[in-house]
Image (cartoon, rainbow, N blue to C red):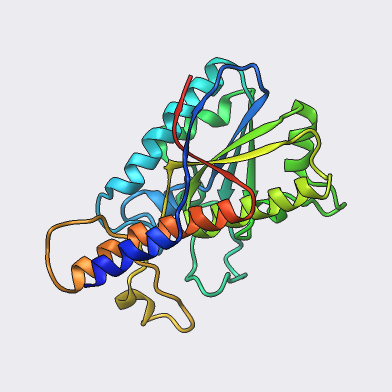
Length: 256
């Protein structure tokens, strides 16, 4: 059965997760990846959910919980916002998160972050936020944030686990390994504050060069729906597995 096949794949690609307790003893920064309307708010755009989505809403709730605690303690927060020029495509994806539109804004639950003094906001026009932080003069806003705040650990949350989150994590780890991100030591992905997005085959077929990316919650229906539903779990798991394979840690719970 397809469901059993996915379970076997997860068994062969195990992701060990840990509990994380944040106390302030180790300088930790929160990195929020693309928790914007264009990926998270129902009906907001081509890559937004078409109906209420428990995985995405759960991710937003956990991100809000963490952001609230970080701001209360005045700990550093770095938030990426996907933001694209209307005339510059990002294949294989349809137009999304166009600069200046509501799509590129943080979700309503997080918009208050824009007024917090400990929060750094960064609009990015590419999948990888690390590259999207590079200025025209060659400097990197994210690198400077790490150095200025003397951050030893970054906690990464957001969407999409296996695309924007993964690409950023991989680049941050490579930069750390090359000595470009002192004093950064650990990159931790919080699994319950990450999510995938839904771009079903029916929609992808209508856009030249687009790739399907299913994201549907598990249910009890039979047939093709079960296959799609389990693919959600698999794509999220694969993103975590790939991050782990690059040297990231994965947390299943975060407490203070």
